[in-house]
Length: 252
Image (cartoon, rainbow, N blue to C red; front, side):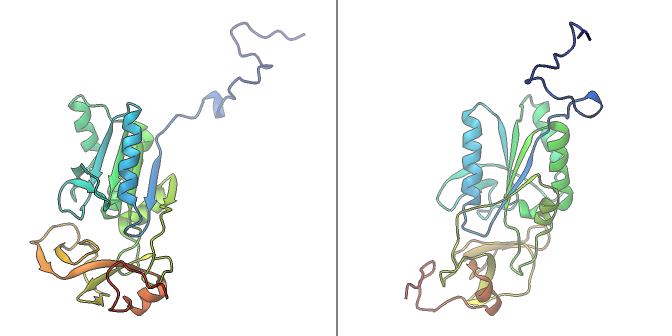
């Protein structure tokens, strides 16, 4: 009969943890998640809701944003909810940003990053490093494609590196009633096909802040907005009957 050492695991115990490769357990690490969708699908609202839920459980988070449409360092939801956030610059090292919190004596359990499509690929890689090495959870929210229907560089890197990819489930409709996926840039009633990749504006006509790459320029007051369209009407540049008010669907 084989004797089991008193200080060893009981092989008959069904609840005993199975040893990892080489007798070591896999290390616990954070998760990098990317929630994406077109404008108006509720990404910023979801980001603030997740922050609220975690904070209620005593977890401390840090809100980050890159080019919020308000022009201020905050996360802005179209349903009226707004929270202050830390603005990410073009040269911000997110690892150093987190270390600054530690130096100040503030523990951080998770990061929430809104408008993550505007991050550089290097900054997305820094988020992945924080999830793996510092073991914090990172929640990114953003648009996948630009006004030319091409992936933003930051969104592309998130698709490549994220542990979880989650399309936001709130359906956004084109003016025709079909699901909307494409963010058309509109100036004076015309869908634009060329221009800088990053132009911060809202879905209604009004002031915009236009800039190339990541360096901000002086605000330019013009009639420019974004409108979500289905693929067919995005291809055709069809914004719908002029008799319809903005946001109103034709029912017949």
